[in-house]
Length: 208
Image (tube, rainbow, N blue to C red; front, side, top):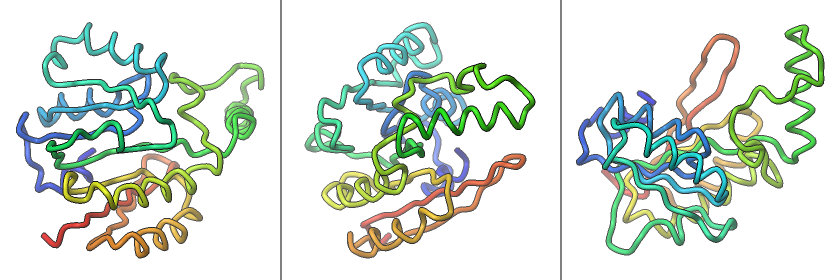
C-alpha cells in the first residue's frame, strides 16, 4: 500500500479519495488504507455476494464507518463506467486483478501450491475470497489491458491508476496498451514479499 501512497505524496486523511476496483469479499484495501492513512474509499465489485460480504465487514468495523462506500458494478465488462459518477474525482485507484485465465487454472495453481507445502491436493483453495476474484477470461493481461483502455475516458477524474501485476510476462502487453491509451506518465514498481515477486503498474493522464 505504501508504494501507491508514494504516488500521491503520502497524503493522509479523509480528503484523499481512493477507488478500489474489485474490492472483493474481504475488503482488504479499504481496511489497510483506512487504518494506515485515514483515506476515504469507494469500493466496487460486480459480484453481489462478494459485495455483501464486504458490506458486513464495513458495518461491523467502527474504524471503517463513514469512510468506505461500496458500489455494485452492474456491467461486468466495465471497470469505471457506472461506478465513477459525473463530477466526482479520486486521487488514486487500486486494483488487484484476477490473475488466472480460467477457474480450472486457478484450481490447478491452488493444488500445486498445496503439493509444494506437502498438503493433500483436496485441501481446497488457500484463498479466502470468492473464486471469481481469482480468474478472468484471458487472465490478468486481458483484464489490465481493458482497464488501461477504459481509464483513458476517466483521466480527468482519477489522478493515478494502479494495478498489481503478478506475472512479469504480462508487462509488455500492458506497456503497449499504456502507449496506445495516451497516458502521460507510467511507472513499474517492483515489490517482493518472501519468495513472492510482483509489481505495481501505475499510470496517469495528467502532466503533473
